[in-house]
Image (cartoon, rainbow, N blue to C red; front, side, top):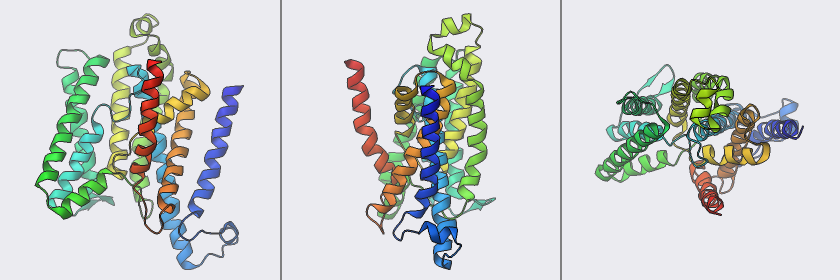
Amino acid sequence: MKKTSTLAALLVLSFAVLLLAPLAGVKPIMPQALLNFSLTDTESAIFWKIRLPRVLLSFSVGAVLALGGMAFQSIFRNPLATPFTLGVSSGASFGAVVYLKLGLTFSLLGISGISLSAFAGALVVISVVYLLSTVKNRFSSQTMLLAGVAAGFFFSSLILFIQYLSDFTDSFRILRWLMGGLSVIGFDSLLSLLPFALIGTCVVLYYLRDLDMMLTGEELAIGRGVNVNGTRKAIFFAVSLMIGATVAVCGPIGFIGMISPHICRLLIGQEHRYLAPASLLFGGLFLTLCDTFARIVIAPAEIPVGVITALLGGPFFLWLLLGKEN
């Protein structure tokens, strides 16, 4: 009963934030004007083309990052795991940095060139990690983790090398993108993310029972009929692809995938049939609130939302470490 009540509370809070967040900004929009269809042309453009797409995108990104973090924490059995643990974020960031350094300008089917380049970088890392993990016909958690960390460090060093060779303008553009941000106009970014988010979410939800079994240990899970390697591969590809698409759209936004699942475990327990929807709702709610704060606290300027999540995530990370030691 408590778990159901917690999920219901998160659902109500999520709806409330989704309704109210688009109204907040440098110039708040009155709910009465929206309901009475009495918005000015400027207010209407701001609401429908900037604020509403941004709020929906922030909620979707937060939900995806939280679900990916939950899945990786379960297969690695480590609460410090994040969706970026296997280096997908570094690969996507490298693709975007190459695009910015070369000064390219193109788009395809309404998707910006930087997003396409970032997603291509994510695909490269996914392929590298998979090949390294199966080089000895094994796909264990430890091998996958080591391969991901190695690939992440390698592509991060390439990013630093490109930054070192760049002039001031390119360095600033690269640094700004690496901070993460949700500034969008229209629904194109959201629509390009949704297919990957929906497919990845469906795959993770399909394997919830297997994730419950894997928490008890791989041998026990195998003894109970779980195809551990098959589950691990499916989760790896599904989560990595939707995280790659997420980073391609908004850059690397850290700590959401670590904070949200852990807080949800404290609220609702380890059972994944409750934990998964709770992580989706809490992650979306948390990132939407962070982004709303980021765009109004120093308005008319705004803080990159990745800075806000990092400021919150750093102390939380230390709390997790100290808590585990105690």
